[in-house]
Each structure stands twice: as C-alpha cells, then as structure tokens.
Length: 240
Image (cartoon, rainbow, N blue to C red):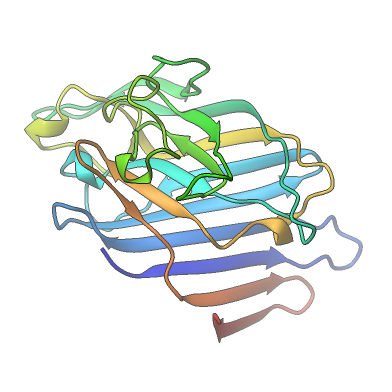
C-alpha cells in the first residue's frame, strides 16, 4: 500500500453568504491483493452535527474482500485537548446484492446501514480507549481490524464484509451473493457544539477487507487548501 493525500477543502464566506466547509481526507494505494484502491472521507460540521461521507473512489472495480472500504478511524480534538461526545444518529447507503454473473441488484436505495447493537453486522461506531495503544479516537466499521487490537471492533460486533463499500460491478466469485454498499455511505453524528472543521485531526485510517484485514494510514503528504468565494485561490504546501 502507498500514497496518502490529505486535503482541507474550505469554502470561504463572501458577500454575506453562509460559510460552508468540508475537510477531505484521501488515501490511495494497493490492497493486499494488489488491486488499486482509492478512498475518500468528506467531513463537515454544521452547528451540533457532523456528517461523514465515505467514498470508494478506486480506479478499478472491486475484485476481492480486500479491496472494500470497511472502516474509518478518525479524531476530532480542540486546542485544549477536548474531544466531543459523539452521538451516532444515522448511516445510509445504497445496498446491493452482488452477483458474479448478473448485474448487481439494488436491494434498498438509501438503506439503513447503522448498527445499533452487537450482531447487526453493518456499520458500528466506537469511541476508543485513550489509555490503550494504538489509539485513533473514533471508529466506524463493519470489519474488525485485528491489527488494532485491543482498540478495534471485536468479531462479535462486526463480522465479514457485508455492507462494506465497493466500486463498480462485482464480477468475482468471492464477492458473489454479498450485501454491499455501492460507492459511498453517509454517517451523521450529533454532539459537535463548540467544535469546527479546524478541530478535525489529520491522523486517520481506512480499513479494508477481512480475514485478514488491513489499513491505509497517513504518511507525510500534501496539504491543499481550496478557497471558494469572491476570489478563489489554491494553495499547496508540503506538510511538516
């Protein structure tokens, strides 16, 4: 695996218009099976609410469980070292039944992929233990990520690759018959009063596959700030 890019996309307030901002975290590389993958997380805070859109933006169709976007670990912390108490509100995505020999079948448009209890086998949320390493603060996942043990999702909470996010059409036997989320999922949280996009950390990880699973984690990368308003500008600088 290789190549992580971190981008802050900031829409600057102009002419009295409301200020909107999105932090974009991107990762690209290869899965454990050598397939090119590219993942994207778009994170926006509006008042008390955090919206995370996870996107499988890979340049090729998903071929293996190893190529699927199955978890996302992130951190939100203000300059005083305080983190929000996140309340998991909803998770939606287009749910498809994958088929090797036929077009994938839409099971539910904007389906509910929020796991509320152990055994739901969709997208769980966890606040991780700060006293235990490795520590990535918050996690969304439908796979266990064993290499993060004990700060991970245990197998009795999430299991397999069901509801992981895939790209394209399924053409392989090892994904045939799986319930998967096509292209992207949207996750909503409350509890962000007093926090802003500037508090979103650049430490993050995307999880792939299962048995074994793997992670894409940040490396020093380019920080891009894109301003949109009366005068748009693009500034790129090397992260320190």
